[in-house]
Amino acid sequence: MAHTSSRTTIVFIVVALICAFVPAFSVEEAEAKSLWDTCLLKISPKCALDIIGVVFENLTITDACCHDLVQEGKMCHDTLIKYIAEKPHLVAHETEYLKKRDDLWTHCVSISQTA
Image 1 (cartoon, helix red, strand yellow):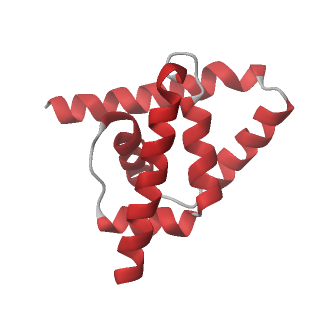
Image 2 (image 1 turned 45 degrees about the vertical axis):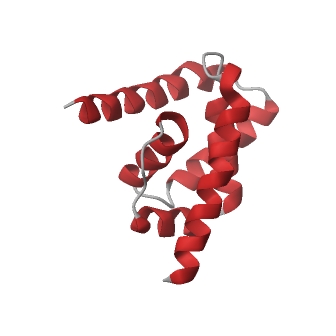
Image 3 (image 1 turned 90 degrees about the horizontal axis):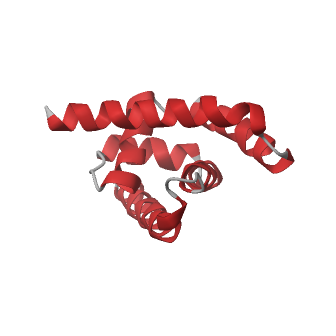
């Protein structure tokens, strides 16, 4: 039950971040929002939550989601995670999150190459 509750919390955080910050975008953030919208079309909602869970909550990711992440592309992955990590309540740990983002990318590329 705690796992489901944790996932629900992640969904609410992501939705709240999007809703709270969409009206206040600078030019750079508008570009990030556009990329966000484009990138989210390339990956399933479940895999998007799994990726966020790996970076922000130390969860695990399936091989199938790794394949989707690699198909999504490094630019999308990097931009989306950085976008979330820069939010005021997360920015104190941004360096840690960006390292986990990079580690996840490396892991998923290695999974994709062995398939």
